[in-house]
Image 1 (tube, rainbow, N blue to C red):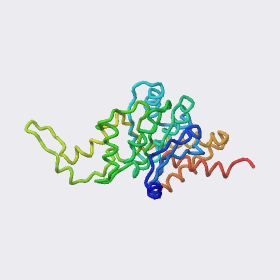
Image 2 (tube, rainbow, N blue to C red):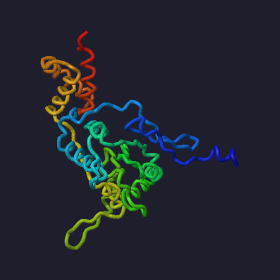
Image 3 (tube, rainbow, N blue to C red):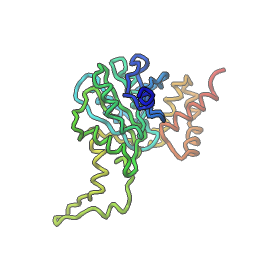
Image 4 (cartoon, one colour):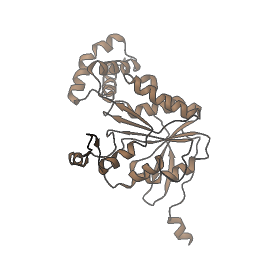
Amino acid sequence: MARIERVLPAPLAEPDWQASIAFRYRKRSSGHALLEPVRHVGVMRLADLQEIDGQKEKIQRNTLQFVEGKPANNVLLTGARGTGKSSLIRGCLNEYAPRGLRLIEVDKADLVDLPDIVEVVAQRPERFIIFADDLSFEDGEPGYKALKSILDGSVAASTPNVLIYATSNRRHLLPEYMKENLTYKHTEDGELHPGEVVEEKISLSERFGLWVSFYPFSQDEYLTIVAQWLRSFGLSDAVVEAARPEALVWALERASRSGRVAYQFARDYAGRHAAA
């Protein structure tokens, strides 16, 4: 019996909560799961994120309400890639960590274990954001139903010190097909109602209380972000201005004017033009 117990999955144990402000949930091939402290949390300040002021205000307000013990919503951030969805969450973590905010990153495949994670942190004094990055599901994946249940619909009451923040390129987190348009129904008075398949796909995203949408940047917005990052690397205004043509070529080569592309260009340019 002792040998068997050693190979059976053990209950999720608490980590050293003082080791970090961010943790990753990891499940080993043996079935054992643990919360690993993130030793080097990425430095991201809210002030570093440009041209997304409306989205920043919504996320920051909701997070501050949460930290202060006021009612707050689970959040779904959707839209164009590289526009600052994940960075905004990291920025909020760094902003409010001194006030007790913590983050637990969970992969999509491990969302079925959300109840176990919530059980471990439920009695802690800190406030926890469970973070699911780049989230999307295919039909029938187990994590889909687990997330629906934990958001709204489980018999258990929601835990006041836990919120779920998820990012996705899909607004409804599931693939949408042209044939699903055929399931829409027309009423006699001309109203249009989605069919059961569409309703099921919408039902998960609707359980997030706050939706925040992100959009592709214009050329001017992209250049503003480039300039901000170049200045953060210590380059002068004259050098920043001279970098504009190269920044546009960089974006053209990648067919994208995202914040991520702007940051990558700034790192490359600053590395080549840094003072010796």
